[in-house]
Image 1 (cartoon, rainbow, N blue to C red):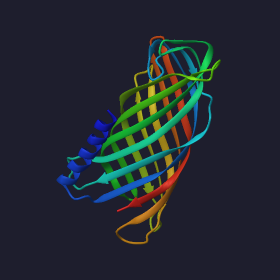
Image 2 (image 1 turned 45 degrees about the vertical axis):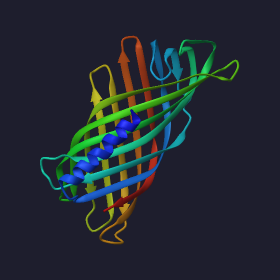
Image 3 (image 1 turned 45 degrees about the horizontal axis):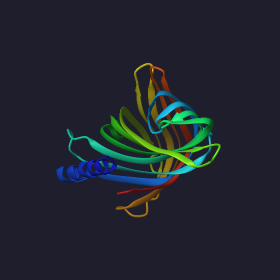
Length: 252
């Protein structure tokens, strides 16, 4: 599935290149100092943990990698494209059973998640009076892998994985201060049905160095919070990742 998603990302980018010359290409990469929190409580033996019991985050901070690319073109009816990747990491105690293995003394689980976002969007405002507004749809592919050890023996007893695609509404606003390289922006991806809510929100400031007219490097610093609050009958997942991120950018 991961190879398929990567192929779709490349194909989307190539299709956009073939249709028009880009007016703008931006990309960035860096580290997100994230602190996870929350729990997973399941009775169906499903998910990356194949869990029938409860997992609780140990709230251990870690710095994880992220990368993004933004592609703009001049064709009005064709959406622009934004691609993102970020890794998430969490660990904590687990009780009940995982993968059919009972944990009478409890266990300890590590969950590593790769997230890929494919975001077709439209420019509602494109640096109009120094303001940019984008609206679109995010297809967030979540691929989680788990490893569980038994407390009494401290040996690995189960490894599993699970993946899903979550569609979210996407909005981004940006203000570029005139005659400076300083800008500020915020974006959010959001969906809810009343009982379950998923969102991924960021706010940042950045500075672009006007060194050459072709390639302009920059730096960015911001804060990001991602919330997954899902209720499905007796099964519940309430997880949150938040913290400061910083990275470098290139504008073409």
